[in-house]
Amino acid sequence: MKRILFHVISLGLVALLIGGMTVIPHGNLAAEESQYAKATFAGGCFWCMEEVYEKVDGVTSVVSGYTGGQLFNPTYEQVSAGGTGHTESVEVTYDPTKVTYQHLLEVFWHNVDPTTPNAQFCDHGNQYRTAIFYHDQRQKMLIDESKKALESSKSFPQPIVTEIVPVSVFFSAEAYHQDFYKKNPVRYKFYKWNCGRSQRLEELWGKS
Image (tube, rainbow, N blue to C red; front, side, top):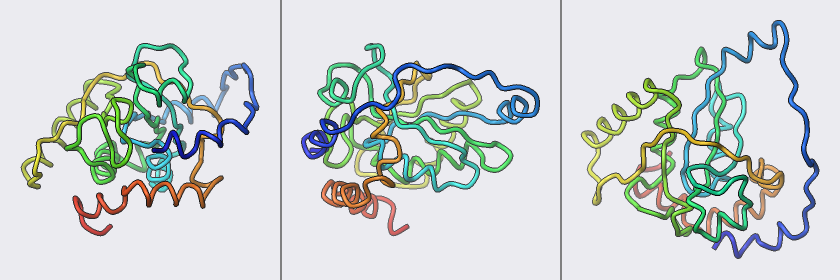
């Protein structure tokens, strides 16, 4: 549904940047950046997950993109059509002194339907599966613990099917996808409501 609804948007947009250069941080900037950590989540539509994580205190940036598949540097059209193995994802950069990875996991679980395989709400296909991509063994341990705690504390009608897999190459989505909920609030709210995301989350987790 999302691909059909917003295909016309992508046709009217032109990429602003082709290529670019890497800036190597120096001095205090390098030290500051070394304090940050990354977390990668797939929770269906990356517009929605970007909105959720950008509102978390301690999160410094959220990038929408694609990961988990085989195709190098895929486009939105390729991923949304299926067959690439990639899933819509967000790469979260955060300050561990201000927010814990455990809290980011709690945010994830409460913003997805972890019992639905290869779909989230109105978006269907392997490209919308839920997944948590761990960056190291500590993250994997915390993910496993949070999943077990969730299973023991809440009764779901079906088992949790969210993938827990090692992180792979993350490809940033096109510029017009970044901060879509801010740049296109009317279209975003129309999509989110018609997709039934908020309604289903309330059924699963109660009112936020």
